Length: 362
Ligand SMILES: Nc1ncnc2c1ncn2[C@@H]1O[C@H](COP(=O)(O)OP(=O)(O)O)[C@@H](O)[C@H]1O
Ligand SMILES: [Mg+2]
Image: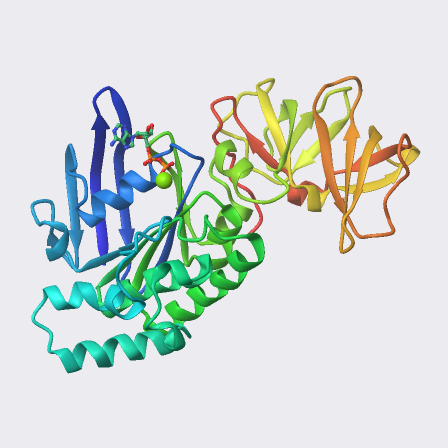
C-alpha cells in the first residue's frame, strides 16, 4: 500500500506538485495520467525516493519513507529510456541489482531465468543490449525490476519509445504481468488509452494538482470537471456554450441559436441564467434529418475509418466544430445540413469554474 498525504514539491519557483493526497491499495494497478509537464514523473520520483518532498508525507506499507533512501523503500522503477548497461549481457543486466545484495549465485540464476521465461526473453540472455530491438530492451528493463521482487513497481512511460503495434502488444503483456505477479503497480503515462486499458484506478493530474481519482469507467461517465471530461475519452468530448434556463433536475439549457436542450443533471447549486458549458461525447450524438431537430449543423468533413466514421459539424457561424462518431454507412454527405440530437442522459454540464453538475445516471 502506498499513501501520500499533502505532498508538495517545488523546483525553485516552479511548483511541480501541490498538496497531493493519494491512496494506492496493495495489489492495485494505478495510473498517473495528464498532459506533459503536469507533475507525473515528479510524483513517481518522490515515491521512489529519487527526489525529496518539500512538505507532506509518503508511506509505503504503512511506514513513513520520507527519510529512507531509494534502495530501502522496496520499490523498483522502469524508465522510458531503458537505461541498460551497454557492456553487460542481458543476464548481467538483470542480475546486477541482486549481486549488490547478499543473494546466492544459484538463487540469482534461478530468479533471472524464471523472470526471462515470464517475459519470453530466455533466448536472449547472452546478448548485449545493442543486439536487441527496442521492445526486447524494454522487456529486459522490466525484467531487471521483477527480479528484485519489489513491493511496488513504478513505471514512467515505459512504452513511449516503442512503435504503435509494439506498444499495444507490450501493454497487453504488462496487464498479464500484473495479473500474475499481483504486485502493486504505479504507471505513468500521458496516453489516456493506456491508462483506461491498464488501470484499476486512474489519477488525473493537471498543473501539479490531482483533478480526479477513480476507476476508468467512472471517470468516463462521471468526470468531476471540464478538464477530466476533455482528457478522458477519444475523440474528446464536445463542449457547447449554453445558458441555464431551469436548474432541474433535469436541467434545461438554451443552446447557441436558441434551441432548448435538457440535461439529466442536478444544477441546483447554480443560479438560473448562469453561463454554463454543455458537454457531450462524439459517440452519444445522433444525427437526424434537419427538420427533425431544433439544433442544426452543416457537415464540414467526414473521416471514414472502416469500423466507424467521424463527422465534423459546424453549428451556426461558430468556429468550434462538433465531432460526431457514427456507424460506417450512416454518415451524411459533406455540406449536408443535418439535425443534431443530444440525448439528455448523455449530457454533462459544467459551471464557469469547470466543476461538473452531478449526473442523475448511475
Ligand atoms: N529537476 C527539475 N528541475 C526543475 N524543474 C523541474 C525538474 N523536474 C521537473 N521540473 C518541472 O516540474 C514540472 C513537472 O515535471 P514532470 O514531473 O517531469 O512532468 P510530467 O512527467 O508530467 O511531464 C514541469 O514544469 C517541469 O519543468
Ligand atoms: Mg514525465
